Length: 173
Image 1 (cartoon, rainbow, N blue to C red):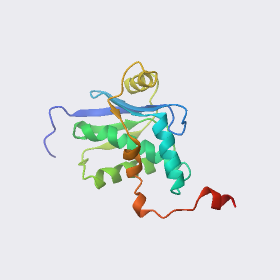
Image 2: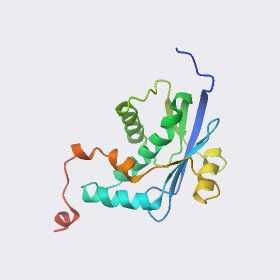
Image 3: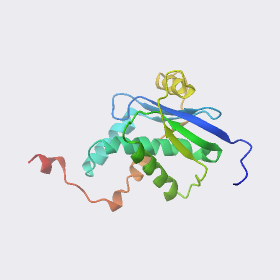
Image 4: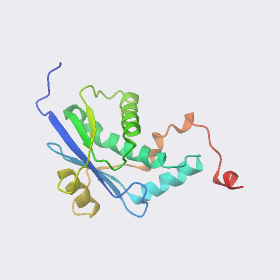
Protein backbone atom coordinates (compact mmCIF):
# COMPACT_ATOMS: atom_id res chain seq x y z
CA UNK A 1 0.00 0.00 0.00
CA UNK A 2 1.32 3.47 -0.91
CA UNK A 3 2.04 6.35 1.38
CA UNK A 4 -1.06 8.10 2.66
CA UNK A 5 -0.90 11.85 2.05
CA UNK A 6 -0.65 14.08 5.13
CA UNK A 7 -3.93 15.81 4.26
CA UNK A 8 -5.80 12.51 3.61
CA UNK A 9 -9.40 12.42 4.84
CA UNK A 10 -10.78 9.08 5.91
CA UNK A 11 -14.35 9.69 4.77
CA UNK A 12 -16.68 12.45 3.60
CA UNK A 13 -20.44 12.66 3.55
CA UNK A 14 -22.15 13.98 0.47
CA UNK A 15 -25.68 15.38 0.32
CA UNK A 16 -27.92 17.14 -2.19
CA UNK A 17 -30.47 19.92 -1.75
CA UNK A 18 -32.88 20.84 -4.51
CA UNK A 19 -33.79 17.84 -6.64
CA UNK A 20 -32.09 17.68 -10.04
CA UNK A 21 -35.42 17.02 -11.77
CA UNK A 22 -37.01 20.14 -10.23
CA UNK A 23 -36.18 22.89 -12.72
CA UNK A 24 -37.85 25.55 -10.58
CA UNK A 25 -35.02 25.44 -8.03
CA UNK A 26 -31.23 25.23 -7.98
CA UNK A 27 -29.47 21.99 -7.07
CA UNK A 28 -26.62 21.97 -4.56
CA UNK A 29 -24.32 19.01 -4.00
CA UNK A 30 -22.18 19.39 -0.89
CA UNK A 31 -19.59 17.33 0.92
CA UNK A 32 -18.20 17.68 4.42
CA UNK A 33 -16.04 15.96 7.05
CA UNK A 34 -12.47 17.18 7.02
CA UNK A 35 -12.97 18.67 3.56
CA UNK A 36 -15.83 21.06 2.83
CA UNK A 37 -16.99 21.89 -0.68
CA UNK A 38 -20.20 22.58 -2.56
CA UNK A 39 -21.30 22.71 -6.18
CA UNK A 40 -24.19 24.62 -7.74
CA UNK A 41 -26.26 23.50 -10.72
CA UNK A 42 -28.54 26.49 -11.18
CA UNK A 43 -32.11 26.11 -12.42
CA UNK A 44 -31.42 27.97 -15.68
CA UNK A 45 -28.55 25.61 -16.46
CA UNK A 46 -30.75 22.59 -15.73
CA UNK A 47 -33.52 23.89 -18.00
CA UNK A 48 -31.10 24.69 -20.84
CA UNK A 49 -29.46 21.26 -20.58
CA UNK A 50 -32.77 19.42 -20.50
CA UNK A 51 -34.06 21.32 -23.53
CA UNK A 52 -30.88 20.64 -25.50
CA UNK A 53 -30.67 16.99 -24.49
CA UNK A 54 -34.31 16.32 -25.32
CA UNK A 55 -33.82 17.85 -28.77
CA UNK A 56 -30.88 15.46 -29.20
CA UNK A 57 -33.00 12.43 -28.29
CA UNK A 58 -32.32 11.97 -24.58
CA UNK A 59 -35.38 11.19 -22.47
CA UNK A 60 -36.27 9.64 -19.13
CA UNK A 61 -34.89 9.62 -15.62
CA UNK A 62 -31.37 8.75 -16.74
CA UNK A 63 -30.87 12.40 -17.80
CA UNK A 64 -31.30 13.56 -14.20
CA UNK A 65 -29.07 10.80 -12.86
CA UNK A 66 -26.33 11.65 -15.36
CA UNK A 67 -26.51 15.36 -14.46
CA UNK A 68 -26.21 14.40 -10.77
CA UNK A 69 -23.20 12.16 -11.50
CA UNK A 70 -21.53 14.89 -13.56
CA UNK A 71 -22.00 17.24 -10.61
CA UNK A 72 -20.51 14.63 -8.26
CA UNK A 73 -17.54 14.23 -10.56
CA UNK A 74 -16.79 17.96 -10.71
CA UNK A 75 -17.18 18.25 -6.92
CA UNK A 76 -14.97 15.27 -6.05
CA UNK A 77 -12.28 15.58 -8.74
CA UNK A 78 -10.27 18.49 -7.23
CA UNK A 79 -9.93 16.71 -3.87
CA UNK A 80 -9.96 13.06 -4.91
CA UNK A 81 -6.41 12.43 -3.69
CA UNK A 82 -7.54 13.35 -0.16
CA UNK A 83 -10.52 10.97 -0.12
CA UNK A 84 -10.85 7.39 1.07
CA UNK A 85 -14.57 6.79 1.51
CA UNK A 86 -17.35 8.85 -0.04
CA UNK A 87 -20.68 8.36 1.72
CA UNK A 88 -23.55 9.41 -0.55
CA UNK A 89 -27.11 9.96 0.60
CA UNK A 90 -29.74 7.51 -0.65
CA UNK A 91 -31.48 10.17 -2.76
CA UNK A 92 -31.53 7.81 -5.76
CA UNK A 93 -32.35 4.52 -4.05
CA UNK A 94 -32.06 1.59 -6.44
CA UNK A 95 -29.77 3.53 -8.79
CA UNK A 96 -26.57 3.19 -6.75
CA UNK A 97 -24.91 0.84 -9.25
CA UNK A 98 -25.61 3.21 -12.16
CA UNK A 99 -24.28 6.20 -10.20
CA UNK A 100 -21.09 4.42 -9.18
CA UNK A 101 -20.50 3.05 -12.70
CA UNK A 102 -21.02 6.44 -14.37
CA UNK A 103 -18.78 8.19 -11.84
CA UNK A 104 -15.99 5.64 -12.31
CA UNK A 105 -16.36 5.99 -16.09
CA UNK A 106 -15.76 9.74 -15.77
CA UNK A 107 -12.65 9.13 -13.62
CA UNK A 108 -11.34 6.67 -16.22
CA UNK A 109 -12.20 8.97 -19.14
CA UNK A 110 -10.09 11.78 -17.67
CA UNK A 111 -7.43 9.46 -16.21
CA UNK A 112 -8.17 10.56 -12.65
CA UNK A 113 -6.55 8.20 -10.13
CA UNK A 114 -9.06 6.86 -7.62
CA UNK A 115 -7.44 3.61 -6.43
CA UNK A 116 -8.07 4.19 -2.74
CA UNK A 117 -11.60 5.55 -3.20
CA UNK A 118 -14.70 3.66 -2.06
CA UNK A 119 -18.37 4.60 -2.25
CA UNK A 120 -21.08 3.87 0.30
CA UNK A 121 -24.74 4.76 -0.05
CA UNK A 122 -26.63 5.34 3.18
CA UNK A 123 -29.11 7.69 4.80
CA UNK A 124 -27.61 11.08 5.63
CA UNK A 125 -29.86 13.01 7.95
CA UNK A 126 -30.44 16.69 8.58
CA UNK A 127 -27.73 16.74 11.26
CA UNK A 128 -25.02 15.92 8.76
CA UNK A 129 -22.54 18.73 8.06
CA UNK A 130 -22.97 18.00 4.34
CA UNK A 131 -26.73 18.55 4.64
CA UNK A 132 -26.20 21.80 6.53
CA UNK A 133 -23.86 23.11 3.83
CA UNK A 134 -26.19 22.01 1.02
CA UNK A 135 -29.30 23.57 2.54
CA UNK A 136 -27.47 26.77 3.55
CA UNK A 137 -26.16 27.11 -0.01
CA UNK A 138 -29.61 26.48 -1.46
CA UNK A 139 -31.02 29.20 0.81
CA UNK A 140 -28.21 31.53 -0.37
CA UNK A 141 -26.75 31.86 3.14
CA UNK A 142 -23.36 30.67 1.91
CA UNK A 143 -21.78 30.65 -1.55
CA UNK A 144 -20.95 27.48 -3.45
CA UNK A 145 -17.31 26.76 -4.21
CA UNK A 146 -18.04 25.49 -7.72
CA UNK A 147 -20.65 26.31 -10.36
CA UNK A 148 -21.15 23.80 -13.14
CA UNK A 149 -21.95 25.14 -16.59
CA UNK A 150 -24.27 23.99 -19.34
CA UNK A 151 -21.32 23.14 -21.61
CA UNK A 152 -19.65 21.04 -18.87
CA UNK A 153 -22.82 19.00 -18.50
CA UNK A 154 -23.60 18.68 -22.20
CA UNK A 155 -20.00 17.67 -23.04
CA UNK A 156 -20.26 14.64 -20.74
CA UNK A 157 -23.19 13.15 -22.63
CA UNK A 158 -20.92 11.93 -25.47
CA UNK A 159 -23.17 13.54 -28.05
CA UNK A 160 -21.02 12.63 -31.02
CA UNK A 161 -21.27 8.89 -30.33
CA UNK A 162 -25.02 8.72 -29.67
CA UNK A 163 -27.65 8.11 -32.31
CA UNK A 164 -30.76 10.23 -32.06
CA UNK A 165 -33.79 8.41 -30.79
CA UNK A 166 -36.18 10.58 -32.78
CA UNK A 167 -37.97 13.76 -31.92
CA UNK A 168 -40.93 14.19 -29.62
CA UNK A 169 -43.01 15.02 -32.70
CA UNK A 170 -42.22 11.73 -34.44
CA UNK A 171 -42.95 9.75 -31.25
CA UNK A 172 -46.31 11.40 -30.72
CA UNK A 173 -47.49 11.04 -34.33
